[in-house]
Structures are given as C-alpha cells and as structure tokens.
Length: 434
Image 1 (tube, one colour):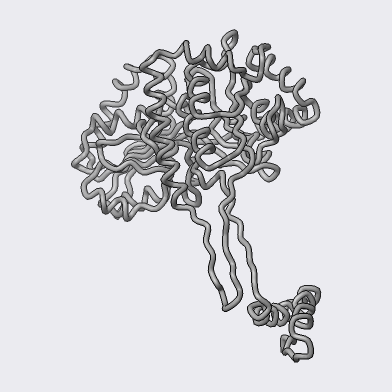
Image 2: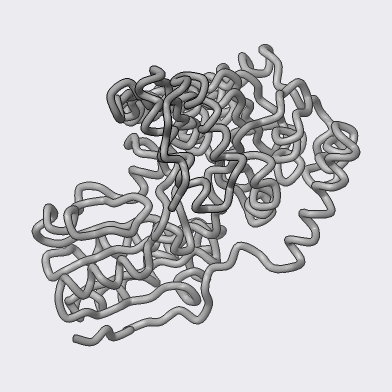
C-alpha cells in the first residue's frame, strides 16, 4: 500500500516564533508589575479602547436590546445543547471509595476549581460560540467564579451578540479587554476579578503564547495553534459536500490546514475542481483567508483502502475529523486520534463549531495524539484520600518501612515505624528490607 499526495502543503501551521514569545514575555512582565494601569494602556494602544473595562448591568441590558429576537433564540438554543452535553459529561465523573485492604480505605473526590478565566476572541468575526462553549462548561462544572473577557471594537465595546451570549451563559464578570492584556487581567486578578485558577478559550498567536507562558502559575485548557480539519471520504461521498466542508474550515485563516483523505481519485479531482469556485463565492475577507489556506496548507491524499485512510488520520491527529464514508460504526471503533469526530454527511464541523453540543475548543497541531478538548473535566480536580483502622494500617506500614529502606529513604521508613510501635506496643516486626 502507498499513500499518494495529489496536493501537498507548502507550509505547516505554527503558533508563533521567537518574536511573538519575546513580545508576550515583555508584555506580561509589564502587566504584572503595572497592574490595571498597564492593562488600560495596552487596551488603548492595541484596541483603541478607553472606555470602562468592567461591563455593568446596564451594558448587559443594552446588549440584550441590541440583539434581534431570532438570534437571541439561536444563542439560547446553542447554550441549551452545550449545557446539556456538559451536564451529561459531568454525570460520568464520580467520587469513589474502595476498601483496598481490610480496614484500609482510599477514595477520590471531584472538586471544581475556584475561579476560571474564559477568553472569547474578537476581531473581524463575532465569536459568539466561543463564549457559549467556555462559560457554559465552567458553570456546569461548578466553578464558583467565572470571569470572561473579550476584545472591544473601537467606539463600540464588546460585540452586542457576543456580550449577550456571555450574559446568558452566566458569566459572573465580563471584562472589555482582549489580547495578552485580557489574559493577564484574568491571571493576575484585575478589575475586581480573583486570580484565575485556569484560563481557557481560543485566541490568536499572542493569546496562545500568553497562556503557554503562564502555564504552571495557572492551569490552561491547551495551547492552540491554527484550527485544522480533515475529511475522510470514499466513493459514497458527495463531492459538493466534501468541498464545501473543506473550504468552510479554510476560511478560519491563511494558516489553517485542511486535508482530504480518500480512496477515490475521481472524488479528489472533483473537489479540486470545485474549490476555486467555492472560495471566490465567499465574501472578500473570507475568500482571502480560504484562498491562502487552500493554496499553502491544503492536502489531498489518495489511499488504497480504509485502513490506510484511518492510519493517515491517526498520524495527522486532526482537530476536527469528518467521515463521509460507508460503515460509520467501523470508523467510530477504529479511529483513535482526533479532537472531535463527525460521522456521516448529515453532520459537519460547522455544527460542532456553533450549536451541536460537544465543545469546540479542541487540540490542534497534532496534539489530539495525547489530549482531548475542553470539557467539564478541565475545570475539575480529581483528588484522592485515605483512611484506616490501626489493624488496617499495619500491613501497609510494614511494607512501607521495608520499601523505604530499600530505596534509602530512612525518614519515610521511620514514619511507618513510629506508628507500628505506637499502635502495637511490644510486638516485633520485620522492617528491614533484607
């Protein structure tokens, strides 16, 4: 079997280079030292915003009035789907207790973090769905304090529909600030927000680098690169659907990879023929993004059979993976490395991006090999505990003493010895490793 590239990318997706890292590091240092004054300065310099940072109740009410009723209903529809899916996820996370040995119990508890910071991107697009995905999931997880921030539009503030979504989803605090300064405001606890325990949400390369640089001091969901998407298709697939799905994802940005993996050369050629027309029919800005991504980052890969297609998909570990092929149950059981899976022509990545229910904050750049996307799990800590009777502690203490001495950790051994001596006075124990 051989994999054939009918179209191969000339560039790969990158989060950012040394210039971005240096700039972000300098900004974070200035923001930590300068606090809110520095954050306001960056907001004015980078976003041309000098208005209030903390969104008050009057601004929330104004956003509600500015959003058309049909769009309000759509936002509530998406919120309900995402909330219900997150609640189903949470129901799978259980506290547990086991009697490891007679008289010795161990267990785990699921505890939500205290404070979360949710970043909602801005820019040319209104990222309504990102607000719903991050804030809703944090609230369902049980996070006590959720701060959300988004970059302002000059003279406007946060886009009204985005602000309405942030309010509907239950953000305890909304900050009109974006970029590195927005991440810093939530991480360092500015404008009335507590210091975040975890930062989540997509953003540009500066936002991604700020989260990466702060990881360890705070938790993060993941370090996101440009979004990517793969379609697996066989001879049963409809070329128009495949092409529309690939170009629809390419509009994210000039560096957003899209890949078609197929066993059907005629399908691949049809997609190649359809792509230029689909791109040119988009609005100008979207078309520029899609054209650059298709030209530089798109790949069409011809395989001999479905197992080879699955192997290619697992190797690429795409953020989004669509299957438009026969025997969907086989694909669901076989595929291993993806952020989110879309089975059949009746669903598409756009559904997952906006309103279906599963989260759209997903691993990019191949990181789906080792992690999943944002979920209630990201906002919760699995912590363990133990408890014992004196008789139950005895065999554990004996084994601990011997293992510790074998390792050369005498202090550990003696913390077991002292309990044996106290709980079972006058009794002899074999506590040497030999």
